[in-house]
Image (cartoon, rainbow, N blue to C red; front, side, top):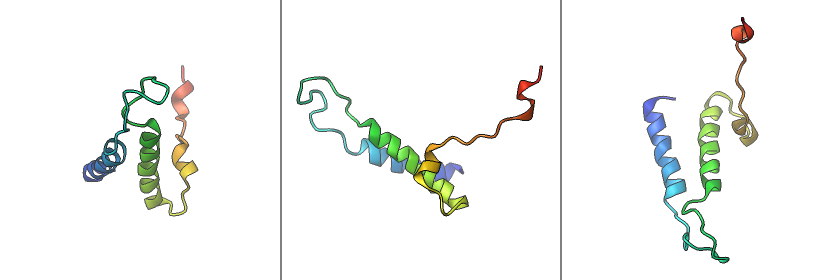
Length: 80
Protein backbone atom coordinates (compact mmCIF):
# COMPACT_ATOMS: atom_id res chain seq x y z
CA UNK A 1 0.00 0.00 0.00
CA UNK A 2 1.41 3.35 -0.96
CA UNK A 3 1.52 6.32 1.39
CA UNK A 4 -1.29 8.09 -0.46
CA UNK A 5 -3.50 5.00 -0.27
CA UNK A 6 -2.71 4.61 3.44
CA UNK A 7 -3.65 8.24 4.12
CA UNK A 8 -6.92 7.83 2.21
CA UNK A 9 -7.77 4.70 4.17
CA UNK A 10 -6.79 6.45 7.42
CA UNK A 11 -9.39 9.12 6.70
CA UNK A 12 -12.03 6.50 5.90
CA UNK A 13 -11.35 4.58 9.14
CA UNK A 14 -11.25 7.78 11.15
CA UNK A 15 -14.60 8.91 9.81
CA UNK A 16 -16.23 5.50 10.30
CA UNK A 17 -14.99 5.01 13.85
CA UNK A 18 -14.38 8.42 15.38
CA UNK A 19 -16.95 10.40 13.41
CA UNK A 20 -19.87 9.02 15.42
CA UNK A 21 -19.27 8.86 19.18
CA UNK A 22 -21.76 7.09 21.40
CA UNK A 23 -24.43 9.16 23.06
CA UNK A 24 -24.20 8.96 26.85
CA UNK A 25 -20.84 7.21 26.64
CA UNK A 26 -19.95 8.08 30.22
CA UNK A 27 -22.86 6.10 31.62
CA UNK A 28 -24.94 3.33 30.12
CA UNK A 29 -28.41 2.18 31.09
CA UNK A 30 -26.95 0.19 33.98
CA UNK A 31 -24.66 3.10 34.98
CA UNK A 32 -21.47 1.26 34.07
CA UNK A 33 -18.79 3.30 32.31
CA UNK A 34 -18.53 2.65 28.57
CA UNK A 35 -16.00 3.54 25.93
CA UNK A 36 -16.75 6.62 23.85
CA UNK A 37 -16.19 4.74 20.57
CA UNK A 38 -17.31 1.21 19.73
CA UNK A 39 -14.57 -1.34 19.22
CA UNK A 40 -16.81 -3.25 16.79
CA UNK A 41 -16.75 -0.26 14.43
CA UNK A 42 -12.95 -0.20 14.54
CA UNK A 43 -12.69 -3.91 13.82
CA UNK A 44 -15.18 -3.65 10.94
CA UNK A 45 -13.34 -0.63 9.50
CA UNK A 46 -9.97 -2.40 9.59
CA UNK A 47 -11.42 -5.51 7.96
CA UNK A 48 -12.95 -3.30 5.27
CA UNK A 49 -9.59 -1.62 4.55
CA UNK A 50 -7.88 -5.01 4.26
CA UNK A 51 -10.71 -6.32 2.07
CA UNK A 52 -10.53 -3.31 -0.26
CA UNK A 53 -6.79 -3.83 -0.78
CA UNK A 54 -7.19 -7.59 -1.10
CA UNK A 55 -9.85 -7.20 -3.78
CA UNK A 56 -7.38 -5.31 -5.95
CA UNK A 57 -5.35 -8.51 -6.35
CA UNK A 58 -8.12 -11.09 -5.85
CA UNK A 59 -11.52 -9.78 -7.05
CA UNK A 60 -13.51 -12.61 -5.45
CA UNK A 61 -12.07 -12.10 -1.94
CA UNK A 62 -14.42 -12.56 0.98
CA UNK A 63 -14.51 -10.83 4.38
CA UNK A 64 -13.37 -14.12 5.91
CA UNK A 65 -10.18 -13.92 3.85
CA UNK A 66 -9.60 -10.40 5.18
CA UNK A 67 -9.91 -11.61 8.79
CA UNK A 68 -7.43 -14.46 8.33
CA UNK A 69 -3.72 -13.91 8.70
CA UNK A 70 -2.04 -15.81 5.92
CA UNK A 71 1.69 -15.50 6.38
CA UNK A 72 4.21 -17.75 4.74
CA UNK A 73 6.63 -19.43 7.11
CA UNK A 74 10.31 -18.87 6.46
CA UNK A 75 12.38 -21.95 5.71
CA UNK A 76 15.27 -20.90 7.93
CA UNK A 77 13.10 -20.22 10.98
CA UNK A 78 14.06 -23.44 12.77
CA UNK A 79 17.72 -23.13 11.94
CA UNK A 80 20.13 -23.57 14.84
